[in-house]
Amino acid sequence: MKLAYWMYAGPAHIGTLRVASSFKNVHSIMHAPLGDDYFNVMRSMLERERDFTPVTTSVVDRHVLARGSDAKVINNITRKDKEEHPDLIVVTPTCTSSILQEDLNHFVQQAQLLSRSDVLLADVNHYRVNELQAADRTLKQIVEFYINKARKNGELSDSPQKTERPSCNILGISSLGFHNAHDLRELKVLLRDLGIDLNLVIPEGASVHDLKHLGRAWFNVVPYRELGPMAARYLQEQFGTPAIEVTPMGVVETARFIRQIQKILNEQGIPVDYEPYIQEQTLHVSQAAWFSRSIDCQNLTGKKAVVFGDSTHAAAITKILAREMGIHVVWAGSYCTYDAEWFQAEVGQYCDQILITDDHTRVGDAIAQAEPAAIFGTQMERHVGKRLHTPCGVISAPIHVQDFPIGYKPFLGYEGTNQITDLIYNSFTLGMEDHLLEIFGGHDTKEVIHKGLSADSDINWTREAQAELNKVPGFVRGKVKRNTEKFARERGLTEISVEVMYAAKEAVGA
Image 1: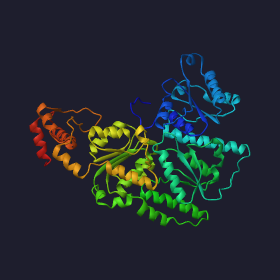
Image 2: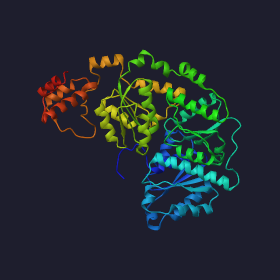
Image 3: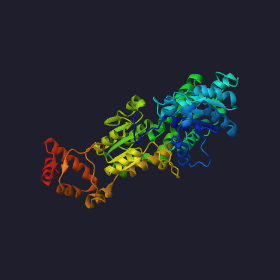
Image 4: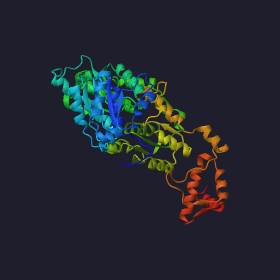
């Protein structure tokens, strides 16, 4: 455990609450001290919900510490059962309940005897998994619970009858997901165009009573690696339902996604051919393929970029930049350290280096050292970009209010290709803007950072040298400063004067 003022992924209970609050008529009980209940405010604000978030905090206070938690937790469960009449109550452990070594499983068993609702303890270890891993585990746990319950009640056979027409489940659309609502809308359009019915979307907007029908789908769609793969594997084990884990982001991957659907349907005796549809969408509907051949996109060829985010979005954007737009990806990275092997295999051929870390200071230093023309990352990288005077396009969670736009901005499907192309193109300083910055020096007069963002400079600048540095245009000042300090270090100098600046300039042939 470490203390940090920034985390790319939240604690485990946030992942559990995201999944539970996405289902209809499911209530969550969180056993935690006051201050850990920020999820309610965050969800209501970002999702713009009109109803109260269905989460109750069973507060750990001095009375609990003195007498124990069993009576309080059980009372909160049974009280919400009577007041809200939920189908399911999910009890989520927290770091506090783990530190207190409370037997929440026993509390849940006792509360179940007194409740009409199903009561389930989220099976997550707060010291071993983060928000994303916990969300994936919780979704699979809820699916498994209701599949087993249906079988026990004789409502589900081992080989459920498939729907009459080809259909699919979409697994992993949730509350507080990055552009999830818009992605779902675009996926529905794409599947409708392909003649695929939608069986179930989980967890967002689904009823737990419908989970017994998941096995009726012909295949499962898992658009994000962060939420859904565990449930997809479970459904494949139980019903033999194939899963498509290709993320339809970008022209190439969207086509690959469609071809995977075609393959599954052909194998099940449906002779579909989606090649004309792919051709029509690529050439005449999506503007991304046309734009990649335009003179505007050619201006981006060879420009340097860095990419950082969750596994799904960072890998997809890296491939779009390198493969579809000819942009040089200096390095690509992900904070999903548990998914490092998959990420490296996906992006290895599309970038020079790979960075796997959840330490934002390492990411900031790597960006500063790469000196890219644009950054594609999270909100943290956007802040880094402001300090470096480098534009940044936000392409991944952690979420921010700006990631819940009023307008329609999916990342998936063919409309998603248009949105991503606009985001990428508008994230670069281009053409006349570059020329004007070079002439007038921009508007920035602040001292820029040195070789990294996390360490103090070991070299002093004289007042005269600093004044001379401030005359350098803002968009290249950081590079001039780093080159000058490198020149000084190589010669054992501890102070930079105007004379040293000119000597460094001559040494690099500037």
